[in-house]
Image 1 (cartoon, rainbow, N blue to C red):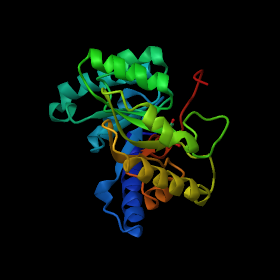
Image 2 (image 1 turned 120 degrees about the vertical axis):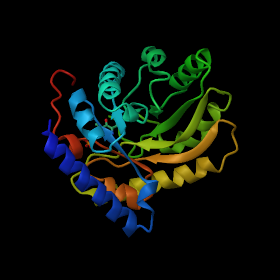
Image 3 (image 1 turned 30 degrees about the vertical axis):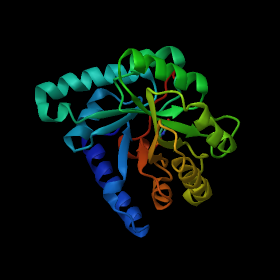
Length: 248
Ligand SMILES: *Cc1c(COP(=O)(O)O)cnc(C)c1O
């Protein structure tokens, strides 16, 4: 994990790169939400980021999200209560159906819905709690065997298969683009994501309200912004290298 000063420096640098990328594309930097991916980093790292006005965080595992949310929440209520209510947690990892129940109501957005079964469980658990849960559909835009996500060619029909689920709201699409050292290599995938986004947005299903395109990470977020990302997910670029320990 990076030191306190380093996290502050990194945030500053990422923000200025977001601004520059947005301006290159003729976009308003305010239309881009930076999600700080805090997985495998301690609550203190999140608290440091909050102290530097970062309020949206992404987590990959339900247990880790719930623990950190509790710890950061109680810290903020004691130290800066005005910030305790603005902090938002995004769920960005692969979600097992047996973990859904605990997650509903704790996250502002589930980025990783990629099966009818998962969508149905989210809908059922949301109905029980009398809420509508915002979700994104995860697209495997590179059609990679190792990745989760809906195949791009199946995305439009997948959306129709969810049309009866009234306690979910499809707010947009998410992708984890292929890993690359050269961010240009993913531009084509980001463009394909934008096209899919437009196709699905054009539909009239009641449970669709598309506004979010979640794509771009530490190595390629500028390209993603140039191609239309509204939400970027940056971990290493803010918190430094992660220690996976026994997670993988
Ligand atoms: C870990 C992770 C990120 C952040 O990746 P970095 O390369 O550290 O920026 C973004 N999105 C998802 C889905 C992740 O799992």
